[in-house]
Length: 132
Image (cartoon, rainbow, N blue to C red; front, side, top):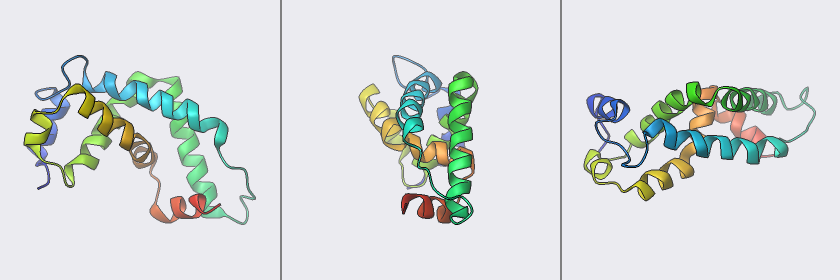
């Protein structure tokens, strides 16, 4: 069952959260780790031929640079994206009983999708980029 809007807002407000740190802080470190791992591996190709892949690369690179430049500001936006990703098939009772390790596991597993979501990536852009 999907999370309701009210349940999503409760998570964002911290009514349900990891025990050791805030959700935003827990999102910040995996985001920076993902960025520092991926920035050096951004693919090089002829942007005039692969226009969708080029748009993907530009959007994701800009978002990654934003994360490095102002991680606090992007942590909240990424948190919202992660909650939206989870809300599609997630259950609120699972969130309420989640351990810090489970929170961390979900965030690490979905941080790139959240970055792409915030960056405004379309599926066809990602598909072309991934196919290179």
